[in-house]
Image 1 (cartoon, helix red, strand yellow):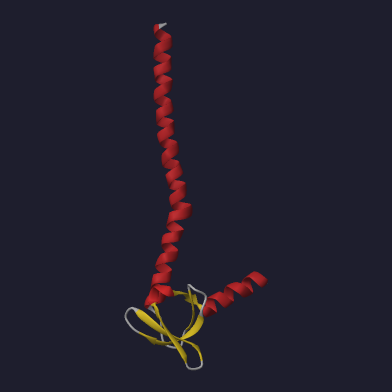
Image 2 (cartoon, one colour):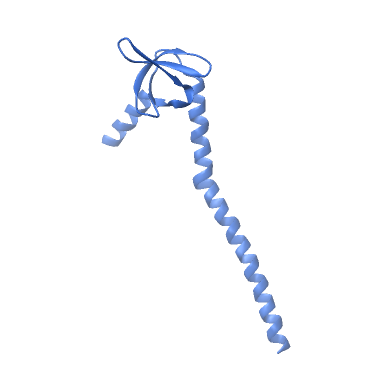
Amino acid sequence: MNNLSIFLQASGQASGTSTIIMMVLLFAVFYFFMIRPQQKKAKEARKFRENLQKGARVVTIGGLHGKVAEVSEKTVLLEAADGVKLRFEKSAIAMDNSMQLNEETAKQA
């Protein structure tokens, strides 16, 4: 009976070690397939917003298409139509309109 209890204790410790290894592997998968790509995308978006220039065609997070008329430190003045100008926070700019058009043509091809 003494040998049986030693065997059961040893298998319990191995099970705990394998659980820890599985948890570490699961975290690694989440990091490389979910967290890291999202951080990269956020960094690219921030870089795009910092480099906005007058004349660029952009799309806001609300779906408004416009042309950048003026760029200040925290806001952007967009011209949505002739004589219609709207001021948005830089964080409300989603992407360059030409990037969206390139994505749409790639999906159609």
